[in-house]
Length: 355
Image (cartoon, rainbow, N blue to C red; front, side):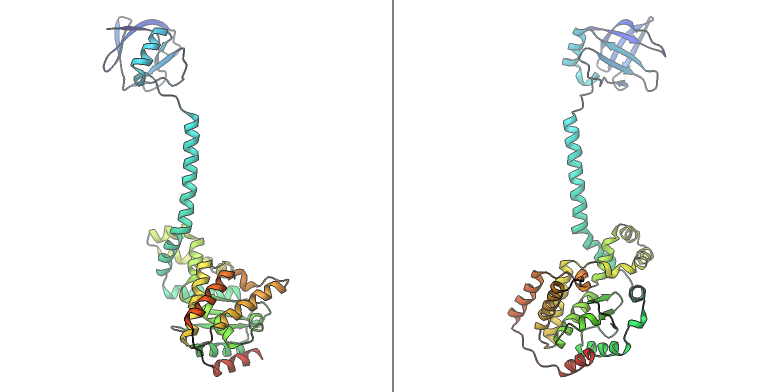
């Protein structure tokens, strides 16, 4: 059996002692103080200092370790060529390590993007479907109270007219919807969960026909029916809501939504939500034989107002108007080749409201 040269160190303040060791199938063996020491490969701590001139082999499971220092060139050569994996840890490739870290970072970023853009809508959809109607109504009341703090601006007479106008539209499942006419020059309108639609004088005054108001109310009602505001909010607070949803804690979800009720109107609708509401409004008007051109006319009014006004149109800040939205409705109207009839009751209520 071939013998190899090394220095053996043992104790707290070791002194190197020249020894010879043999390599067996299960470990190494050497004589020290007339005693045969056997080190099993399973307990050997392999060398990882990558010094070409020496190999350090430690043994044991606590300090101070016993160890062998091999500096003999022939022994080093034999170990590296015949017993490498038993005694030496392969050197770390920093290039590979950096590459792995970069790959991990890229995968993490892509995972976050995938979660947000693809999984979040699915998760938020499931969360929203599990919110009880009575809780949605509570959120709506809290939101209305937080947004309409100056109740003196709510014109009760015009609100009644607006309610009559809305009732005349006969939208499906719309009997419980509350409408508010706010006497303010702000060009805005929005829908709040729980069945609330708020319309400002500023946007009504820009209209010339009852079809434009029908298009606006159809659009806002579609946001209610599709629960876009709730889905918007749930996407923005999905981590906490997802945790509650996973644990089956609907109370936790409700608490989060209630706490953030004041943010409903500050969250922008996505292009998908806006397009969906546009198309639903178009369907409502066509089914009721109201001229759907009113939607396009409303778009034009808002676009012109935004160009000519130095103030930001609040409606457009939460309902981004794009050329694609206009063209989409324009194309659908052309395809439908709809027939519409005059709506004298709607026209009368509209003029009563703007006068």
